[in-house]
Length: 316
Image (cartoon, rainbow, N blue to C red):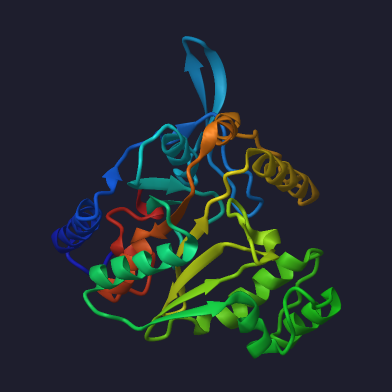
C-alpha cells in the first residue's frame, strides 16, 4: 500500500495529470485517444505484449494490448493531425518490480519539425515544470559513457572484453551472444545508476543496432537519432527523431522477428497499417514516451512504483 493516504495520492495523481495537460495545451499540442487493443504489436525483442482474443461478428482473431500508443499516433500524424500528445495505459509482460508494473501510465507526444535535440529541450522543460524546479541539464554521448567507465568504445569492443567487464562486476551472464545484450547489461549495472544525480541527464547517440524506430544520424550512420532521459539513476523517457522510411522500418521489424526466433520467442505480426501510413508519408517529426508513474514517484519521494499507484498489480 502507498505511504500516502488514499485521498492524498489520488489528488496528487490528478493534479499531476492536469499539469501535463496544461503544459501541452499552452503549446497548442492536441490531446488524442487511440485504441488500447490492436491487431498488431511492436516487434521489439526486449518487450513482450499481452494478448487476448476477440470473438464476435466478423470472426475470431488475436488482439494485442498496446506496449505504447506509438503506431496509432504515427498513423494520425500521417493523416494530418499535427502536433499531438496522449496520456494512456500501456501493458508489458515480464515487467514487475520496484520500478516496474505490468500496467502503467505513459505520456507520449510528437512534434512536427523537431529533431531529437529540440525534443530533448522540450522534455527538460516539461520535467522541470512538473517537478517545480530548474534542475541542471546535461547531454552525454552514449559512447563517451562507456569510454569513461570502462576505457573502451562500445562500437569497437570485442565480445570477450564485454564478457570480462561483466565478470569484474560479479555477473556470470551465460547465453549472451550479441553485442547489444552485453552493452545493455553493463549499461544497467554500471552506468545507469550514476546518471541524473542532481540533474537531468540526456543520453544520445545510441548504436544504430539499437535505433528501434529512430532514423540514423546523417553525420554518422553508426549512430541512431535516439535519446533517453535519466534522473536519480532512473530512466524516465525514450525519444526518437522518427524514421519515416517504410522500407527501412519493414526491414527492422523483420530483423526483430529473426532475433525473437533466435531467443526462443514467438515472432509477432508486422503492423501493415503503420507501414502503409509511412508509405503515404509521415511528416518529419520527433516523438518521446515518458513514464508518468516513475516521474510522480520521484516528485513524491517514493521508493517504489507501487506507492504512487491506486491499485498496484498485486492488488488489482
